[in-house]
Image 1 (cartoon, rainbow, N blue to C red):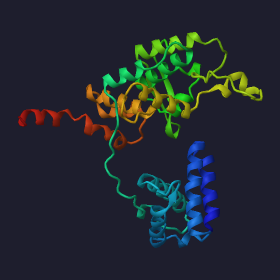
Image 2 (cartoon, rainbow, N blue to C red; image 1 turned 90 degrees about the vertical axis):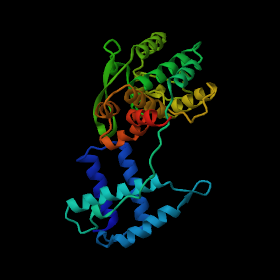
Image 3 (cartoon, helix red, strand yellow; image 1 turned 135 degrees about the vertical axis):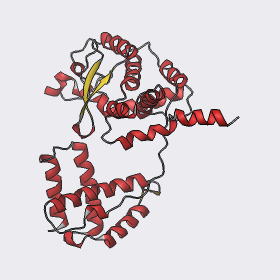
Image 4 (cartoon, rainbow, N blue to C red; image 1 turned 120 degrees about the vertical axis):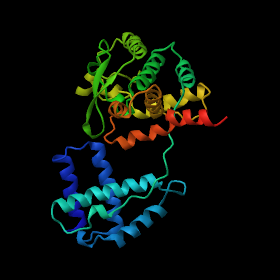
Length: 306
């Protein structure tokens, strides 16, 4: 079977049988098209460890933009997509390289950037609350920190999704997995203050309050989709607010998610509960936080190092 045909079959399987997200499908298509471009439209039976070795050398030496190379993380994502494809080949009894023979490059330990309470208060306090956009921005940051939501999960929310009175709601995260998240009293208060300032009928929880120019009216306009706040807008808002607050760290919406998880663990939450609140499918992903919250090591240091 030719590589191009088997890739198409795999992508159709991911879309129909596995019902994977559009973002996942786009990612798989992109990474596998790169492998196809490198290997050519060969029979999949010709994919072997020697070909894979040369492909990895190709990825490692690939330049883009201003002469930069692909990061090790991005190279591994290419290989993860290829392994998923090879697993599909094996499942269909197509002769190909066994996916378990394909190993990922060893990654250095990941360092998590988070903010302490003082930095968080400086960030929140730097927002200009004299305008509705400022009230919205404060509500967004309070909500990100209170719930640990990913930015894509937050921008997808509609007003009816969030039970403010109860202070909890369900969100559909990566892999379309559903989990429950909780609003602190402070986050509830800021969100209500923002929503009470709105007089629109639109569904999105957070809006771009600049009216779209030359926008063709359609059915989705009645629901406000053309005014839904984007991931990029929130990323820029958080970054600029951190600069205004005089915070030297590289602060992103994901930094607030890291801060949420770190504070939970520092205050005694167990790792499994934090895993569930973050929506991690694997406990190993959540364990990146444990090296900064290991109270036992701190106690040992305090006892024996004078």
